[in-house]
Image (tube, rainbow, N blue to C red):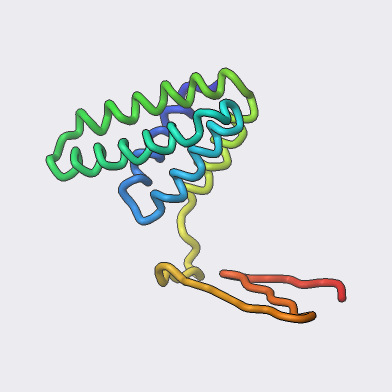
Length: 137
């Protein structure tokens, strides 16, 4: 288990909790806990929400010490979780890569998109937020 990885992921978690992507972080962290401790998923998600509130308040107050403390706390938690299941480290590497990837120049962020469809009979509906490739009949 790589300590530096846990610190980098924890820093990314705390940073992402201050962005519009925070709910994705919430789901990802809850999902990791559910892999190892299914009964703790909801509790950990509530703790992520509490962390978000704390980091937003700390940033507003210019309290870098609290932010650093939250990063250290989540680094320790992730370290302990990864010690229980080696697949957690693999997932954390994937999350970190996704969270730190620079947005592609070809992508344009337009904000939330709501999609809905209604099908009946023998209809088929395909919806995608980006490219979709359909093969077969």
